[in-house]
Image (cartoon, rainbow, N blue to C red; front, side, top):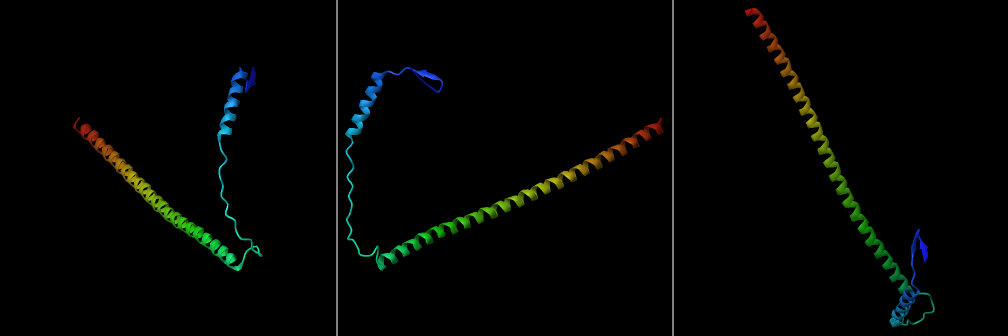
Length: 131
């Protein structure tokens, strides 16, 4: 028995040998892949002027493509930023409107309470006057 991570496991050596044999058979059954390599003419220089120009043009194209993608990403980010700012301004305006509406409702409720108190006091005076 072997112990791994605090657990004991029974190891059947016959099963382990069988698994190893199957793995070897599977590995032996795979044939190496055929790779074709084109042979190029050796040049006296590491590369000639034409190859140099082509490589530089290729690098310029790759850089231009990436810069174009980055500009596109920047433009998208600016549009998203503008949307966020517009939504934030709208939410702030809505919160302000709710605050003003709540203040107006509170003032109206207070005015209603004052009117009710005046009416109650007038009714009390009338009832005292009649009594």
